[in-house]
Length: 162
Image (cartoon, rainbow, N blue to C red; front, side, top):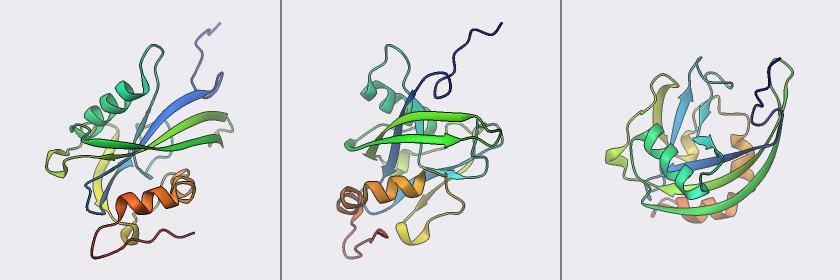
């Protein structure tokens, strides 16, 4: 009998989700490989599950260091999302996503998990990669106003679709 409980399936998982940016209107995304749990081939802003005993801030810093080889320069909590999904195999999942905008040093960024990410790239709102993670449009829509303020890069003002 398997007694292992899986986050997001047997109990609600907590995800720390981050949209890393350079302070000049560019943000970082990674393309999920076949070795990721799901959403293979989709571009994802980044995130990780909160482990028992870890703080949200420790998890944010740890995950960004692991995935993108850089440190958090500044961060802003955007809000949360109640995420219900059905995986390709029909498994229902439930996560609470704590969403952050995080400024990083672009010159320090590298793919720290090439086994999970086929590639990483910098994008702007007018050059979004495709396809994106199924939850990315919801993140953009939900946090539109805050992200617009954070990602505005003079003289080009970035506009989020409403």
